[in-house]
Length: 306
Image (cartoon, rainbow, N blue to C red; front, top):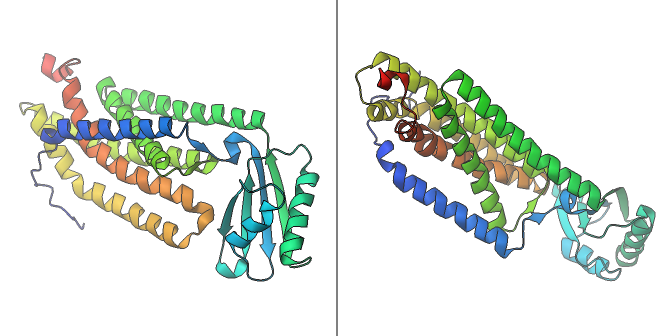
């Protein structure tokens, strides 16, 4: 089996725990400050309400020309996104305007495009609307989905290991979500249902890595009964470090390919995953695992009590 890093390495991860926690807290606070500064997250149509119009052109078109055309029908605040291959010439028009009559909105866009590009040079392929009530419902369900995912992980880890392990794992997951959301806010990127899907994927990825290290810690605790827990945690993280890096690197390379080649449609999803994978790998090593040692002071293990 190929090992990027030898299992007998002796990096002091536990010794870096305080610095890691300070850095994480500082970054999370910066993210929260960014959310406050921007007046909340930049919610997409899925949550804020509005309409999405997909247009396909038969000749070359640009986002600037399309925006100029929409200015004439008071849709200048729309977000225009080109997607797919360049030869497809397809665009998504996202407008915060919630039209009660979709046909009326379609007619306004149709007249603007006909005037700017000529009738018959484009096709309006779909028009979808999300009302503010639906957006609010989606927001509540997105928050509930994240909360249930955290709760399920807490129960699972607490049952499989010990409660102190579960607390460390959940803190790491919350850390990953907050860091990812903070980065999205700093870049003022849209928060959509795709972003929620990415956050749930990040939770699954991060907890899988954490459980692998927890398994090794528990195994080493049984083998080295007289050893200090600090030493056991460090040894366990070092022994699984090669696996952690290889797993994260594989996912990282796939996400880079998606960011470069995937196009605008999945860019937000891939970027959120990209940030989450980095945060998840970091939190697994520097937060979740060393936190077991921190909890030993307040919730001693059976081995220590004996």
